[in-house]
Length: 167
Picture 1 (tube, helix red, strand yellow):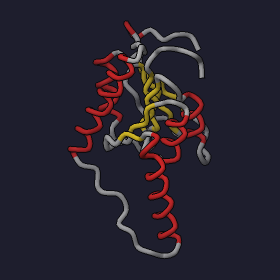
Picture 2 (cartoon, rainbow, N blue to C red):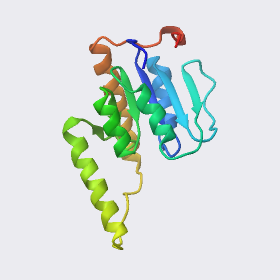
Picture 3 (cartoon, one colour):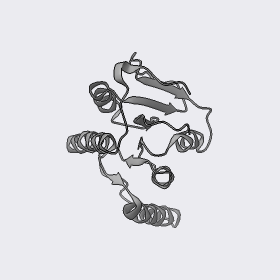
Picture 4 (cartoon, helix red, strand yellow):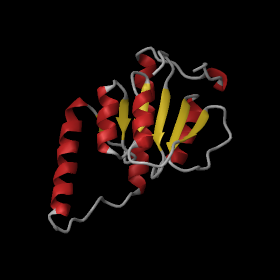
């Protein structure tokens, strides 16, 4: 990861239901967005939005996002292990439902994920995640805005004019 004081939103995009919300907030706040996916996806034509298509494979997109995670970065993902890697690197990690992962919550999230995986592999029928609701979008927008404000207060900046630094 290059040393920069720029705020960047890194999006685990393959199954992200809040991409439009991210684009709108990024445009309004002048924050750069890097969308990482295993297949080409449409992104707005905006100099603040970059699309990276990685080869198919287990954790390839996650590894690319984790490489870029660190202070001044906001990682949007529902993937708990990726969120844990991001938090460990110093990034802010936000789930599409607006839940913010931090040092305190990531351990519980990993434990719950592992428990549910063990139950399913033992043949238990689980209900799966709750359906994505409009209030989840609202919580996400608030969490992303708050994360940007906190990073700005910590001395990180936005992309004035949409120009990207080299690197």
